[in-house]
Image (tube, rainbow, N blue to C red):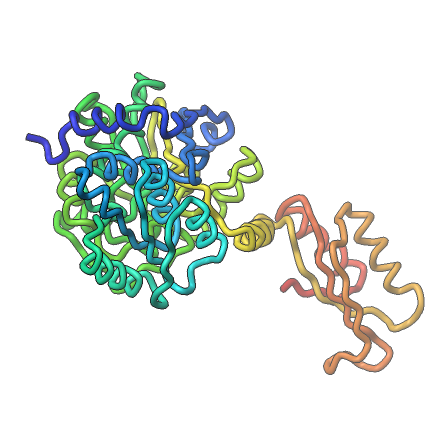
Length: 402
């Protein structure tokens, strides 16, 4: 018998009808050209609460006994799982308590409360919040809803696999983000027991590669730390139950690095006008950044879109710099009228746009009679920014990029 029977996932699909969105599976020409295969994006970033987590949470709550429902549920989370459990519990008409770290983003705390949960802030990191949740669970008798290591949770997440097969029967491979393993375990069980020929491949961040290491070692491996911008999949130790399912059904797990994740987030913003968090973008990153060489129709799960707006601005700025579309220069000009205008006119001639300029005649390392000028420019690409530097140097300006 399978470690996660197909019947459980099919029952979860029936339980979730009318509760969750059947999210779009959208073909993308640009990403297909970059990946060398036909890329379809499964947009769980458009799911209620902004991620797939509601599926597993609601299914878990749906199988509780009446006595368990009366006692309510409890969970520990810093983000998507918190919101999923809160929404699912309120939808089911039962009480929920979510323990979140004291440093959890205010927007996520407010969203979790907005979905109807009682939020308890405890500890500086997730592990401390988890310990507090376990303590409260023992005191109250509430049912603990684990973020991934639970068959009912896995079955709920597996409904995404059934939706992909229904919408794209000739899909060749499905690429899935991996943290603790609940999402890919459920999806792989659904897909392999329905269409065994379809490949299921997981993707982790290189800074949190526990499942990657475990899959290749065929035993659970704990990493000393899990540091990545993809915080939704920053897990040090895979789930015990999820790993068994993954060993049975998942074909492979690969990793992508931080630069590849950031570049893919920016691509999604710019090309598809979609906000996708780091954890949600790793599947597409593996395809468009060359980590996977697949053919035919490939579905990439965009697992969530709950990204802090301040982080979005950092991603955009970093991405523009990496792409050569934002460049910062420092040079010197004679300290007399018209010299700054002359510099600006040269920049205008090469079609670069000045975003910011700082003129300082009192800088410590600038000789008397000259002024330091720091300029932030918007350019088309790396070749264009290189041409700007070359032109300024040919005109006699001592220019450094920083």
